[in-house]
Image (cartoon, rainbow, N blue to C red):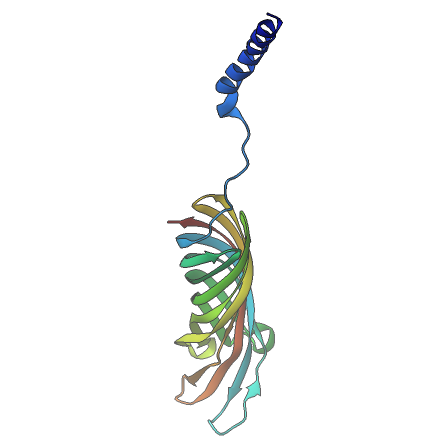
Length: 229
């Protein structure tokens, strides 16, 4: 009889606990079941700022040595689009990205020669590989690849401008933070180094000379938002 009473009491005491588990079980805190997956194709937009410099040189004929003509500096705000694909292998993330940015990187040699030679970079693009290390929602990456820019070289004293597609390389690094499964925010630094751009300047009286923008470069800092498919 005593055993029957004991089991009855235990059953009555355990019933409220079981009911509470049924009612409040859906509201319990749960640890994440898996880390964030960075794999997939993505598109995005970015805003930023850039500055750079180019050596400025000239010579009278193709056989003459190049003469320094003062460095030209330039800076601009920029905006653009980018797209890419990446795949995650454990903690490593490997991928490729292409981007296009527009700005008004304009400079001249007015501090040296009284506003004669000008540079205008109205846009640039890159095609780069990316490799990174992921820790759940955080991705740290390095990037490098090819670069090209819409590059205009001019002589304001002769009202002469020559437009070129300058090519070179780009390298940098960045951080990316996943806001949701398919949305992430990133900050990135990129150095773009272009090859020399040479032009033949024709003077107003029919004469002329050769001019060169030597080793022009850009340093870019930008932030962007990515949407992954």
